[in-house]
Image 1 (cartoon, helix red, strand yellow):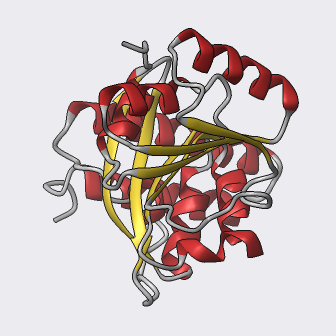
Image 2 (spheres, helix red, strand yellow; image 1 turned 180 degrees about the vertical axis):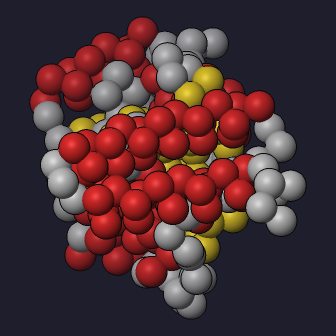
Length: 228
């Protein structure tokens, strides 16, 4: 079987249909796994650079699935034939990059009955906020331990904007009772505290105080017994 990292295994566990598009496939380990495990019947795998696609070709040949997976050189969905796609995976990119891919005209088809599985490496709060503002419902989110603790988000187009408070953009649909959630949120708060300290040192105390209040709001969510 194809060796998958914990974060890609988590992505695979959230897939629902049999026709998957993996944007930014890199070595194509996930597509190969999906075919060999029977989780998907059809897979399109894309990357924006030829080098990763050449690596992907090697992976597909090694596992004997070259005829089952279509590799496409594409910037996001720009050159992807989208008819029939049931699931989209975008993993291993920054949250802002994932947002930009989903916001592109070529991604209009995801505003339909398409299951989105998104794994941001950074700026997850930017992605969550965009999803909510653009009528995507986040239905599930899991913190997963890999080289760091990352988050995997499952979402779909609902047609209705979702209300998301500023603090909620940092924890989304994570289950606060789980240990990995607490580790993930601790990292979020550390980054915010670094930002607050930098603002204070720059003489921007009002902005620093706003970040500190945000940290407090996140902590109230994580530990509801504190602050009522």
